[in-house]
Picture 1 (cartoon, rainbow, N blue to C red):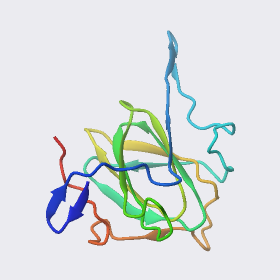
Picture 2: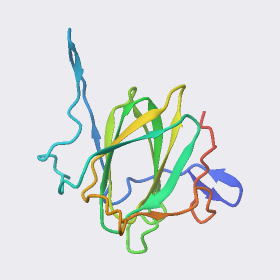
Picture 3: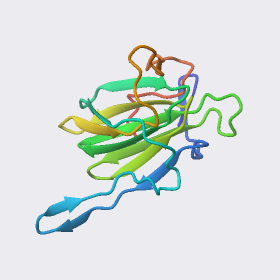
Length: 165
């Protein structure tokens, strides 16, 4: 969906250039379950930077932000969240595209987000969403590769509170 003034228009979206999505699969037995999230032999694997977990409370928007160098590789391992991407890159064939991913326990995905693509999340349901990220770069506390954009910036054609139905 893209915003044109105040009116929402349905638009078929293309996958943003450089974004990869991997459907995860649970392997279960009487002891529990296991899902391989990210492997070094995945076709879009670049390199390992670090692994961290962040949470997103239901109804809370965390975004927008982007990186100039790192690629994020995000999976929701507990709860549910909407991960939203926006491509502002001038030289991209998908400039202006918005991608939404409903992901978590009910739809296990890994989403790989290239540099310069804005992304944010919003938790939904009744419990916090636990998001696992394996970025290609370690966080540099003295010089972070993280750039923030207001989640309600009118330049980004996305309404965090639009309910689809």
